[in-house]
Length: 224
Image (cartoon, rainbow, N blue to C red; front, side, top):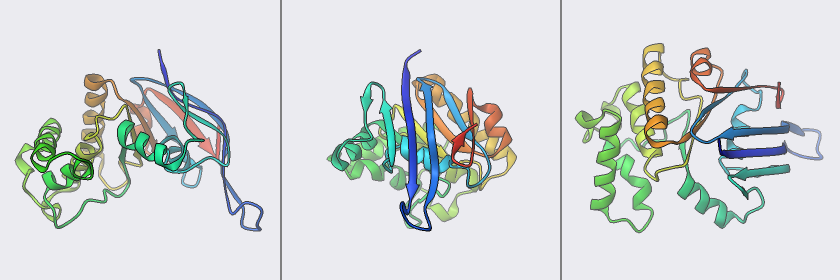
């Protein structure tokens, strides 16, 4: 299969050269194949979220290289990194960062409204994405009117608005119960099967780790 994500000897160091120096990620080398679900497991503070941010081009490595496909992306300018995130990657965060004053469809349409897409076209696509995650009955509900599981579905729909090749999910089950977690995982599995996406998820939840196709366990910033 095609390798879509690769890191080579990647380090991320904060406060380098000071007494507060922290090596959050240490010499991590991994390969993730296209169309698979890969999990980064391990306890809090093990480096999972930092590794995700490196793969998702949200931060640069202190040393080492990150590749998306055949392209070495860690050294790109911020302009090109931003464009690659926008065109290639979708994100599901621990906190959904939805805007309370907006409806579900308005929240999901928002990423496209930041481009040259018209409002009507953005809302049409947002409607399609929400329907695909079984939220057709809540399109015009505001954030405060939605349950925890519904908020996660809105978050997934928003992450899929750019038709991402890669979906990054950071502790997606941290704020929902077991039943909603299973619902979320089934939704993501369907998206992978139907759209051929690659999902990289960071979690310490055994249910999430069991669900993934491949597991990379982390401890103290390293793959173990």
